[in-house]
Every structure is written in C-alpha cells, then in structure tokens.
Image (cartoon, rainbow over all chains, first blue to last red; front, side, top):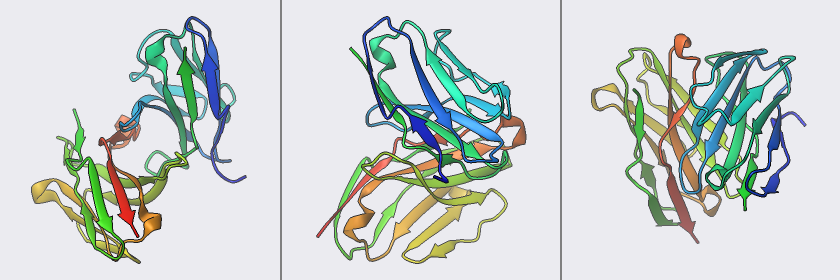
Length: 113
Length: 116
C-alpha cells in the first residue's frame, strides 16, 4: 500500500514485559514521528527522526521508551518493563520534508494488563 | 511553549446543518503552521488542511472552509450541509518553524456527531 503501515494493530502485554511496535513509512519520506494518544485525548509527540538521525526525543516519557530507525526507513518503538500507564494508541507519521503535512498510520493499540 | 485549545468537546447536529469547530492557538513564534485532521472511528488521522502563519486567506474546499485570524489566534473549521459521514473526531494542530522539527501539538479534539 501507499500509506504508513503500522504493526501490530493490537498488542496486549502483561505488566513488566517488553514490547516492540513497528512503523513502515511512505516510501521516500524523510521525516518520521511517533505520537502517543491516550483515550479521549489528542496525540502527544514522542520522538522525531530525519532519515536515520533521531533529532528530537524530548517527548519520550521515560528511559523505558526507546526508538530507532537504523536505515532511515522502517522505525521501531520499544517499551521496556511496560506499566499500565503505557496503555494507549501509538501513532506513527511520516512526511516528505520537515514542513510537509504528516501522514499517519492506523496506530497500534497497546493494552497493558 | 505552544498550546492548542479546542473548547468544544462534543457537538451534535442534524444532517444538512452547518457546523463550526473552534480552534485557538498560542505561540510566541512568528513562523508556524496550522492543521486540521479528521479521525474517524477506524483511528487513522486524515490530513485535511495546512496553513502557514503568513497566509491569512480563508480557504474553501467543497463543503469545508477554514477561517484563519491571526488577530484572535484562531483557525476555525466550518462544514456546510453536514453529512453522516462527517461524524468523527476533529483535531486542530500547530507546528513551529524548521528549528523545531515540525512536531505537531494537538488540541484535545472535538467529537462531531451528525445525525440523520
């Protein structure tokens, strides 16, 4: 498909487990963003990549959150030792350039039991 | 720090009514972009429009129109002759200039329900 692809669509994990969420951006898009959306709220910024460089990670809530984009295309958001407050929808977005509109994937709904 | 406020949490209208969604923003930057996104029940955020801070011209696209007023820091969105398919959560968002990496700051969203 031509859009941003995220997997898995749903993820259930027990508290304390590690999880990895994948984002496949639109081909050729330089910029990639991760957002966290709690139920009933607007998305909140987590981190930003330009190609393989992570230029802003100021939104990551703790050192349990880690993101990478080693080859400048696919990105993985990893959460270690998950806690219940990590339950949310994690959205990935990509854009052609820094000023271009961001195009979002369907998100991964993460539930921590 | 920047902020986006969407004071209307929920709006309910009857099909064919016009509806306006309000958005007020705060930023000290002179260069910024404003956006509207639609989030249907499927969850994907759909891009609707982007405006830059130097272009205050209002825009119309079919049944959608946007009113950008820097004097009141507002960027309101009007749907004319609403339809049931317009039911969704609508988000207003703000991004700053290049040095800020264009991260989006979203409002809390407005849930629009259009009843037949």
